Image: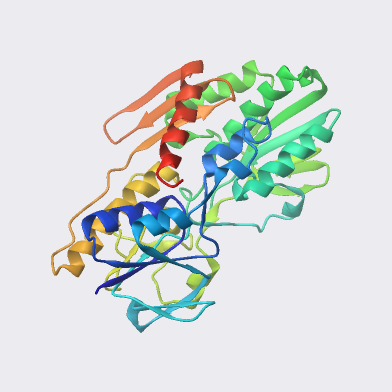
Amino acid sequence: MQRVTIVGAGFAALTAVRTLRRLKPDLEITVVSPRPEFVYYPGLIWVPAGLRTGDDLVIDLKRFFGRMKATHCAAEATGLSDGGRVLETTQGPIESDGLILASGGRFIKKLPGIEHAIVPCEGVAAAKAIRDRVRAMDGGSIAMGFASNPNEQSSMRGGPVFEFLFGMHNQLRKEGRRDRFDLHFFTPAERPGNRLGPKAVDGLLGEMKRCGITTHLGHKLKGFSEASVTTEAEEFPADLILFMPGLTGNAWFDNTDLPRSPGGLLQADAQCRVPGFERVYVAGDSGSFPGPDWMPKQGHMADLQARAASRNLVAELDGKRPTAGFRVELICIVDTNDSGMLVARTEKYNLVLPSMRIFHWLKRFFEWIYLRRYH
């Protein structure tokens, strides 16, 4: 029986499990991750306002793995040997005939004073910390921002910061406390959210102005303190800092001979293959893929890459040439807790629809639909 190992338990990894099982029912599948659980990161934006508890976004995967007839190994990957045929883990080596690396990215935490900032998409604990800090505040300054990987500008995830920002504005307004808080948005980019398209950037900046959010754009970040954010141009107060650093590859990649991109991610081709390694694929935030500079780091893109990687790996296992590619597609709803702006972008069009209440409920409905398959 042929064996495939998948590293990770996020969007790309679970989509790979489902796709592999559908395409090759007799395949032996092993999933390697620290815990058999899936965290639905897009829902973290609703934790500060109490629309989600945080714990309800953590899905136990034991039943899903049982249905998929997949074996879960509670371990962390530590290296790779035998040309990719052996994955080294904290629980010992795992041999396989094919490998899909979907272990996500790692935030770059090199900025001085970054320990004073909360990285909102690090997980449920971070979202709860934001919720508790804001509840305890009588007023003050809240600063939110993001940056990219300096060696690979596309390796970033800034979208959720917009959602935390507008969600916080609406939350404080509904609580009758907005006038006691100053909200700041900061980023080294002059046109934040540019991968969403020019019209979307104009809409986001216009909404910040309407909401009375102070912007600090186009200047390199120098660091944080307990009560401030410092850029090359200024220093401004911040009693609470939310910051999304750029992304790079997992630390354990350093223990392998896998080819890396300038930003430290795993190099991939248009079929999601890792060059120079037979039947080794990458999907999601772990990889650096050919495509336009606006290619997003988001769950939807990870799903598309995982499907392509799985189809190509099955083709190779069957002695065929891997030819499946993935379409580059950005689809997101920039949510504000009670409404949302819809953005869709492909290489042929860029659609931006203004903020409407229906899009908030559409995002919540999509969450329900998406998570049903894993409950």
